[in-house]
Length: 193
Image 1 (tube, rainbow, N blue to C red):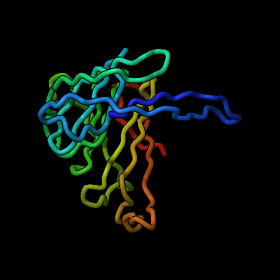
Image 2: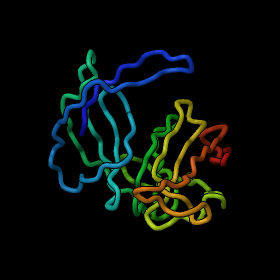
Image 3: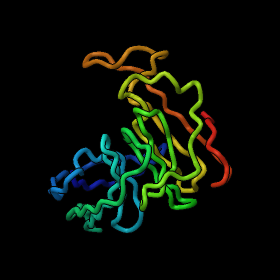
Image 4: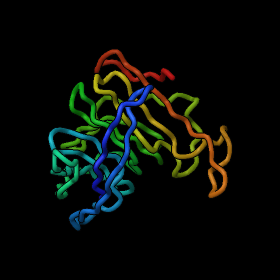
């Protein structure tokens, strides 16, 4: 894990971020914890993260120096293995009910879970037709939910088959950045842009 000190300065259109210092800290050598992917803040120094392939949700404790922002250490605790998860690349904590949404790139799904038990909950995102056509291992790669819980964002790792070729070392590719919205925690997510 890299520990960084990020300082902000006001720019005309908003905030600009700059990394002034990067240091390495050692992550505990815990079985199954390689390849941590998506991470979400829970509270204070507590985060949750997911490993892809074996799809395990972990609790991370990352105490930091409040003056410099430097991460001081890392503790890992295995929480659960979500059912039906295949190759989870991203997660987002739902501020409305404390559940977690997992983006599975191989299964091409975004599902809701209890991050304590790993039990699948009632919510699934109905993936719109415009997002179908993933290439193998190049589906949903990110996930984020706004602080009010009404907007979710995801992005593909590579272009869909209908959108063009895969990226190479010399040529990039188009990816889909998608916003989903809902009016309440009981309402289903719908694509909005």
